[in-house]
Amino acid sequence: MVRTPDAAPAYRVYTRKDIDRVPELMRLSVEDRMVMKAVSAVLPFRVNNHVVETLIDWDDVPGDRIYQLTFPQPGMLEDADLHRMLELVHAKASEDVIKAEARKIQMRLNPHPAGQLELNVPTLDDEPVAGVQHKYKQTVLFFPSSGQTCHAYCSYCFRWAQFVGLEDLKFAARESNRLVEYLRAHKEVTSVLITGGDPMIMKTALLRRYIEPILRAGLDHVTSIRIGTKALAFWPYRFTSGDDADDLMRLFGEIRDAGKGLALMAHYSHPRELEPASAQAAIRRVIDAGATVRCQAPLIRHVNDNHHAWANMWKAQVRLGAVPYYMFVERDTGACNYFEVPLARAYRIFTRAYNMCSGLERTVRGPSMSATPGKVLVDGITRIADEDVFSLRFVQGRNPDWVNRPFHARFDPHATWLDDLEPAFGADEFFFEAEMRKLRAPSPFSPTV
Image (cartoon, rainbow, N blue to C red; front, top):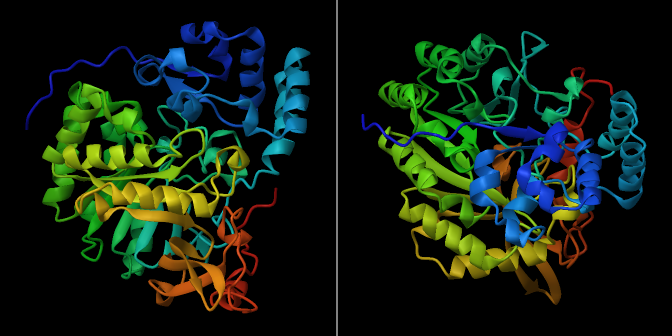
């Protein structure tokens, strides 16, 4: 095993309480920092020194793309909500009062989109399986409780509700034995996705406690383990520096030696995240340890809503040995009104970027909506039978029979999500909607909030 000698800098994390202590933020006005405190009382804020010191161009703030990606922005809240939170911050209201007002806003922001609570929680022996989601036939998502934070929070994050103290809405499991039991009972599952938060926030010894039971259980039908992470971009030293990084590489090798494919589902939102030597060394070391790096991110206004950013990012990923995988559409949750891009524009950005790439970069799929029925790809904008339409296709579906089935929606230049679309050609509903109505029956395991 090749040891990477680069030492990590001292690790520092800044949260809401540190806003007045981040040296770079002293460039901003006092009122700008008050706005940050107001917004971050509602939506989570956490950033580390690698992001602050290496990735952000402070001479370009507030327009800098990584700054928009990681720091609270006034447009993330509706005007009335921002005004109310600012009043409380200026009045130095107690944290209990601020938290109570923030909770009212949070519950209006669709904290768990796409049926995650109502439709995705599986059962075993008539009991819900904690920290597990099973939406697609072959794939189970697992949320280890120790991985439910991140090295830094993306401002657009669709899992923001994991990080703001909404315990009744939080997915988390303290151990993986129950997951193993569920996998034994479900031979159709071929892939386990360990997600969060960010599992790479954990020390390797703790990560082992979740993964080794899966490897020891003789689950031959489980052929791959995936780990969703932003750490390759936001704290690449996790993979390169120190004894724990070495142990992590050994764990990756053990997964490979157990006959399981290992993929790090890496979240890269902007090509700048791939520029530091530390980020490039992290990718190379992970690949040398036997893992595949597959790269994905949503298309986000203010962050990466231009085709050059995506084309350059895909090219850099392939040059480093990673695989471009998905361009997602911003989900209908949290601060989506600030970050979302109309589907028509998303398709144009994807197509122009795709056209700039070679076949190696064209492994990417998108723009894709992770909606309640499944992952829906915007496959084209065309004219059929004198009607302008979106051509759509499922790349994953709650019903596997929906996968790769094309369908059409009336063209709407303002639509940003599947729920905004209407069926084309005079149809009353999309082909999957009748079945979805049957699936939407209330779950006894959905919390009351």
